Image (cartoon, rainbow over the protein chains, first blue to last red):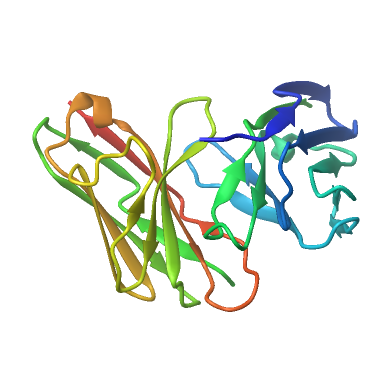
Length: 112
Length: 116
């Protein structure tokens, strides 16, 4: 199915560094979601964004819903080893059966 | 809140066996549940959308007779992989969303299915 363009595909950073990843789409979404998936587990919801321009934080994580409703970014500040995992963005439209369209994922590796 | 439980977490079985996977929303009622398949190092692929009390809607290319979905209550959906073969080996993940307002999907922990 359709995927969002998520970048970068992977990142290998030093502990303490900040991280930024983003998703873009040719379609408008009503909701943007960011999930983290660790090996052998299902995705865990990190942040949900419901309004264009919305900026939301969850601890060291900050995400924004783009004004055009076609993009979103996720920032992680002062990364730690337990931030390792795959981060997925997802767009959702309430008038499309509430199905999610996923990005390809960003694999984050943190060097202690 | 918003806990989704998936069982079993890992299945290994012989070719030709049918396997049932359960997905339960533990602390909320889910009118809609979703079933995904994920291959290694890839994103999640939606297989079907399951609504309580009605037939599931399958994505293009997903065989409904192969992947039987039942959503008998507001807290339980099941996926049965019938006559499984090695090519059906994958990571299957369910998700559920609440019935009111704008709710995000919450995912189960997934089921790793290995067919020998």
